[in-house]
Length: 307
Image (cartoon, rainbow, N blue to C red):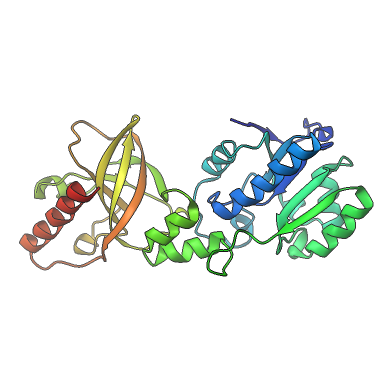
C-alpha cells in the first residue's frame, strides 16, 4: 500500500527527484489509468527511482462543470485505490482556485517547485493550466528544458477506442455493466450510509436499505440491478433499485434502494458498498400492487439463482 502525500506548504518537492510520475485525475482508476501507472512503475524500475501517481485532491470539473459531472467514485475512494495500484507513492495536489487559474508555465512551477521528475507519463490528450491551455507539446518543450522525459500514451485502446472515464460513464448510463466493468477491470460500485426510507418495502415483504446518493456520484442509469452488497465486511447478494421508484415517486427520497438477500438485523447508519453485476430491467410504474410484488420477487429470485 503506497503512502499518500498532500503537496501543501509542508511538502518537500525534492521528493520528485529521480522519480517516474503518472499524472492525471484518474477517476475510476480504470484499465487505461492502470496502463499509465504501470508505465511509470516500469521506468522507475529501470532507472532506480520511485514511481508516483500524481493527481489532484478533487476532480477539476467539480469547480468548472459541477452541474454535468458524473464521477465514478468519491475523491477519497480514488486516492485509496491509487495507493493499491503498485506505485511507491501517491502525491495529491490541492486544486485551489489560484492553482486552477495559473498559466501553464506557472502551473508546472507550482506543481514541481524546481525539482522535476526523471519521467512524466501522461495521456496523449493531457491538458493543463488555466482554460486547459497547456498541451503535450508544451509539456515536451518544458521537459527538454528541465531534464524530464515526457511520455505521452494512448490509454490502452480496446476495439480501436481508448479506455476513458467518459466512455465508461456513457456505458453505465445505458446500463451496460458488462462492458463498463470490463473496462474498469473490476465491478462498478457505489457507497452510501443507510437512511430511513418510506417503509413500503417492509409492508410488501421485501425490506430495503435506502441510500441517498448525490447525482454527481450516480453515473449509473436508472433501473433494477443484480449486485453484491458489503456490510461490516460480509458480502450479500442484493437486488438494487437505482433512481426514484416510479410507483412511489411522490414520496420517494432514496436514489439507491438495496434489498439484501438473507440479511437479518438493523442497517440504519451503516455504510454499504454495492458492487453492480447485471442490469435486470428498466424502471416501471406499477398500477397494480400485486404486479409490483410479483415483479420484485422475480428480480430477487433471479439474483438468488444466478449470482
